[in-house]
Length: 139
Image 1 (cartoon, rainbow, N blue to C red):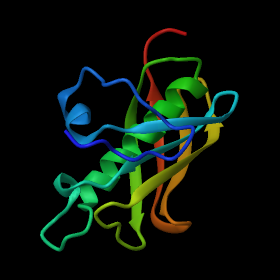
Image 2: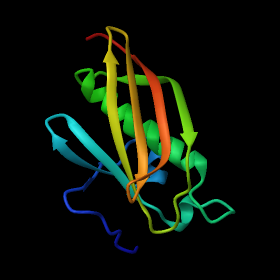
Image 3: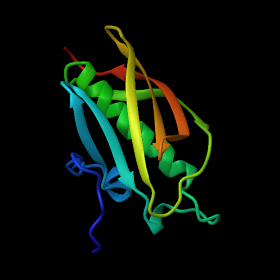
């Protein structure tokens, strides 16, 4: 298996038990301040669609993972589930690109968290996402 080039400071997110996420990764994160991360992945052949750019479903899945992890920690490590995820495609990512994800928590309530984020390549936005996550279980 080829070595994936990762920017300094990023570490692989441990593989999850759900097979879908594990098959998309590896995904990486870098803590930029206490409890706040950047996320990323290197585009491989398996991420491309028939137009030789990253499949939109791959980008949306990565955004869902990034935002869900962000919500999990913003809510005190509570389990959560996506209620709504809106995505706007701006431009494409290509083979070999480093896709950088920057999440932002907008608001935390007792039962839901509002979050948004962008995916960029070389400082160009490729996807903008916003969503709502339901907090599960007792706190």
